[in-house]
Image 1 (cartoon, rainbow, N blue to C red):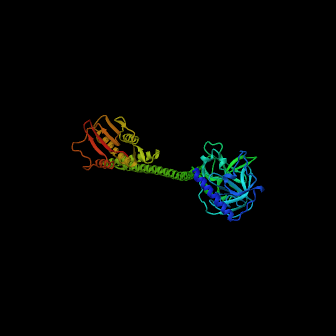
Image 2 (image 1 turned 45 degrees about the vertical axis):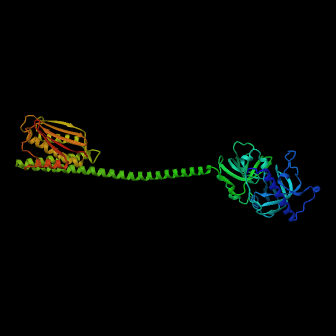
Image 3 (image 1 turned 90 degrees about the vertical axis):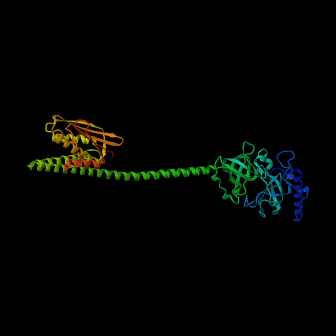
Length: 492
């Protein structure tokens, strides 16, 4: 705390001395005579702590004195088997000790001590012979800040101090545990925050959670200690666990959080790996199932193609046994339609995809197959192809193939019968997600009153039906030689 004004402090000290003297007299304390080595009065701490010649030995060292002060540690608190505590005044403090136990007292109680001044391991203290406790005379104690203590810590021994410091070391010394701390840039004041093994609440001080570099807020009583192995050091006795607090975020928690995060990451990694393994197992089963289904579906397409070929063969036999020309033509047309569907299943069986077909490849083979069947000369009709690569699903391939089949067969039956050199053109173009299919010939063209879907012609009705299945827009181009059927329908 800051120093009191000189006049008020002196007055207060004088009053305390007078009160303590009266209380001591009333208590029947008899003081030995001066000639017997005893100071025959109750003195203040400032008087008995005189070191006139500055030889680090008190002027009254070895003498029995009586002194009054305020307890800044309770008893039994810092030691449960011996009388060990501290008293202080406005500007001085004093450690005291005795092997004999006496009445308990609390922080803030006024004490009158009688005992011998001595030096113990480099520290001036009183070995107490008797003492009196005056509870609640003065409960007000203000701790001296580290900034005040740092420049001359020996002047504050025995007094309550407080401040913020950084942990530099942890260890054990003199039957206790300690934390070495540093305060700012001070070299003279690098105390050890100390808790004795005999402290009443020893097990409640958990230094393990503190790490080197942690900032801590400390309140305790300053003491000294000196021996050969460790040398001189200042100790700050902690009175309760509340005297030690974190001043910042402790590394222990950082390590704990990092450990939890690491455990979380490891757990998440294990969970992800486990989930991935399960997914791989399920994917493997699904893949295996798909492969089996693909094999089965290929086999189905193959068998459908074979069955259609058998049907085509039966129609061929029926055609050979028929004597009616119209029947032969009808059977031949049916054969062509069946072959166009059989070719689709043959393509699906031979390709990797079981749902999409390269329409350009299929139509070329379809038209070449029809031409090979209907053109006995093979030189009479020239085939022209202008085909973009186009993939569509089977639902569109079937009506598209049957549509082309009808138009090509009709061209061979009607358009090329009146020309010496026929020319059939097949175009397939992709434009703005649309498929444009053109089938053109160089025949005599269509009658002026021709309209699809009218009359008794089965081929005309089928063309209109297949165009509707494709959701196709039909345009018949008669501006050039022959006729061109242009179908525009959406892609997949």
